[in-house]
Length: 278
Image 1: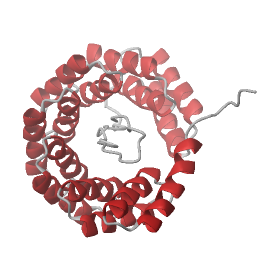
Image 2: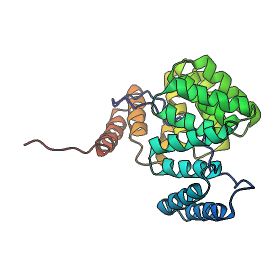
Image 3: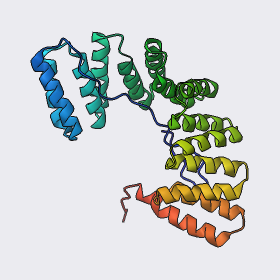
């Protein structure tokens, strides 16, 4: 996620979301006891008992050290717990056991992308696509990394391929809209944000970013409407209050602008743990 610039006029590219592949069905031909432990791990995940899930997957691995699915699922749980280095280790082990596992490449690529290791991320997403040319998530994820490297044309190409495979993939329209916005192609950005909203009407950040694009086009009434919708979905959205205030100020509605800025400021500061110096 690109960082927010904390000024009253906030121009940002928020919440570009990776698409992670989660649990897999257990493979055939594994030790029956290991399979039982694996299934217990899956049951623990359904109950959100993540420590218990890790214990069960680890038992499965101890019984059958070549049990790729157990490493894969344990890696996924490590991700939930924020243990990204352990997550990388498990996905790497999956790839060592089964080099033709596109989901493991995809998920490891996500971690590399979040750690800022963009070349490694691109390599993993590309490998996932080579193994599964119809892997829309991997195209979406590689597009995100291309945006972060400011390779917007490549990002748009990847998002477009993902959309061709799944025209109902709201997140990809949203992400491609972000790329167009960064290129200052605001009309195209608005078109993509609108498509994302049609598919997923509560996609708050699509309203927010479409509002930003309308603001750049100086279509202030529509910008205000979109910021208001983002606030309706998330009343703590300080950025939406701030940017709506900026637009209201530009329209000469100073009292309303001040009210929005006043609502934005506490929300900004609530995100920090402030220590008073006496």
